[in-house]
Length: 193
Image (cartoon, rainbow, N blue to C red; front, side, top):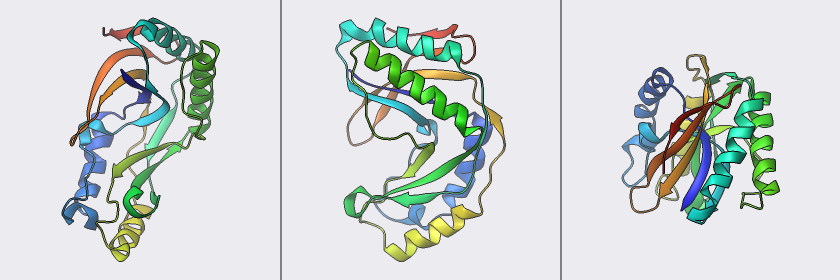
C-alpha cells in the first residue's frame, strides 16, 4: 500500500483557502487539476509502497513521533510555484510555528528509517499543493496566480493530529485515513486496518 504521514488543516482554513483558489487563473484553465479541498494536506513524510505486514511498524513510528511533538499554531499564507513543464505545481505556504513541523517531520523520518521502512529523502518544506497545472497553463497566468497568493493570509489554527494516509492512484487520486494520533500525547484517535 502507498502511504504518507500528514497533517490536514481544519475546515475553516480549507474553506478560506478554497475561496481564494476559485479566484486564481489556474482554476479557470482546462485540465489544470486543482486539488480537491477535501484532499488539502501537509505531507510530513512520504513512504511510498509499504508491504501490509509492515503497517504495525509504520504506526509505531508515527505514534512515537506524535507523542513527543507539540501542537503548532499555523496559518496558510503566501504561495508559489515549483517544478517546470509537466511537473509544475502551485502551492500555498505554511507559516507560524513551522519549526515544530520541521522537528515532527525529522522525528517521523528518523523513526521510519530506524525501523527499516521506506521514506522519501527530499528536504521537508511545509506547503500545501493546490494545483498541478503542468504545462497546460500559460506562464503569465501562473505568475499572476503567484502574485495573487502572495497577498493571501488565512486564519490561524492549531495542528492537533498526525495522520497516516493511504493514497490510491488514478486519474483522480483518493486518500484514505488509516490512523490518526493526537500531537503531544500520541494517543490513537482513529485506527484503520
